[in-house]
Length: 338
Image 1 (tube, rainbow, N blue to C red):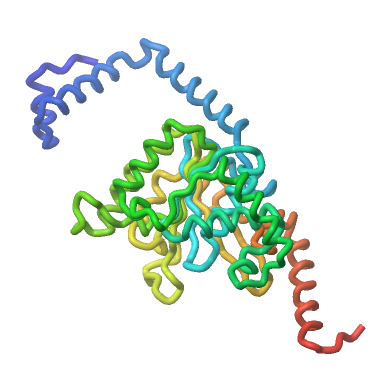
Image 2: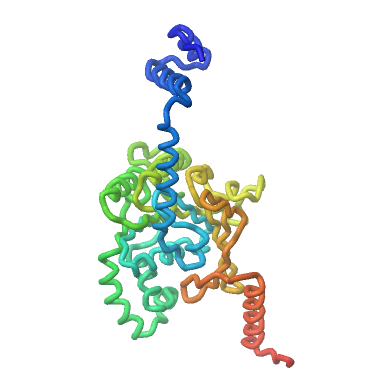
């Protein structure tokens, strides 16, 4: 390859609309790399190093809710994970279900929530530990025995679960989120959870800034941050309600509120689809950079606030649904015919 003269390089850049010195220097470096292609093994070394890091990260995968989801979706550092759901479909419940097994293993978790109070987040995780339903606590139906069990659990959790909750205004401002995340780099968190994306819509520097612009900036920040982080970043994303979603398409990126481009930097994107009739939840994989399982789904029974192991096959799911129907018929008082 013949070497371009300075004048030829400047003419090329001018034609492309680029003219400042920094970009010229960047272009010169790029051309130099092209001339040296094949003359150095640095590129191969970098790729081998990258593959080694990837394999090491897969071996270090964390527990994701239960064994079924852990096998299907590697939760590992250096990656951004999206859990997308409609309002009221379980985002906060999933955050607790991700946090609980990590806490049980003595791992530290950072939870940032701009929707729930610190008390609610703690109680959700603690209820999973004692085998109680968080709804019973909220409705005043929890037994005195379970109430007493919560106290030592919450004391122990305090050592492992760091929370920035809705009471803290930083959880709804991009500068606050960045500050918390930058400080988290110096701590040994196993996982970072942010609940949820669209409520981080304010900028302290410019309160007139539109939510879309703030969220776009956050998207640009979270991608590189997750890659450099020692902990996986799990981000919860809200979808348009069924009545308000755009008519232009049913693909997930058309149903994400405000800023659908958040999908771009994510390694894994999961849509959460609860089935309230059968008390099951579909974890539909919409993007998977690990195993290419896009389009697959894991179906778990939901019981007392906990996602149980996935049904092993379609027949197991059909049998379960049939048993639920029979149970509902019996509860309704209808007589069964043998």
